[in-house]
Image 1 (cartoon, helix red, strand yellow):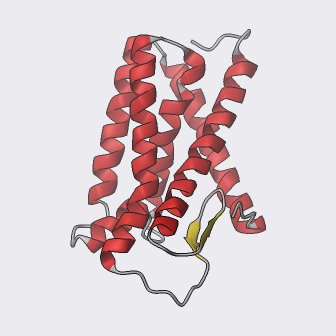
Image 2 (image 1 turned 45 degrees about the vertical axis):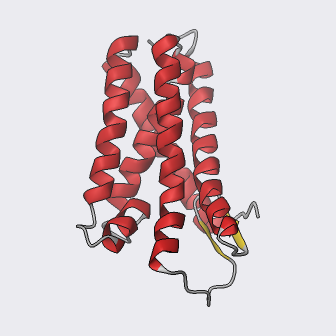
Length: 182
C-alpha cells in the first residue's frame, strides 16, 4: 500500500523501473541485430540497423522484433518470483511496467505494427494475436502479485497512471530528440 511516507520513494521506483524497462527492451533489440551481424543503434524507444537499405529476412525480423518483448517478459517473470518470496512494494513497478508497456504497444498496433504485431503478421496471424497473449500473461502476473501482496486498487491505478504518463513522455522525447545510446 502506498502511504504518505513512501509516496515519493514509490514514485521514484516507478520512474526508475520505466527507464530501465525501456532501456533493456530496446537494448535487447540492438543485441539481436548485432548478433545477426548488422551495425545497429538504439534509443529509449527504437532500435534498428543503421543502414536503412539493408533488408532482413522474415526469420531475422521475427528474431529482432521478438527480442525486446522476450526480455520484457523475462523481466516481469523474474520480478514476479522475487515478489512472491519478498513482498516489497518498491519492486512492484518492475513487474507492473512490462504489463503497461506491452499493453501500450498492443494498442499502438492500430497506428503501426509494433513488436508483437509484426511477429503476428510474419506468422500469418491476426495483428493482435501475439499482443493479446503477451498482455494476458503479464496481466496474470500483475493480478496474482497484486492479490498476494495486497496492493489495492489505489496503488494499481496510481502505478498505471504514472507508468502511462512516463511511457508517453519517453515516446514523445524519443521522437522529438532521438537521443541514441549507440
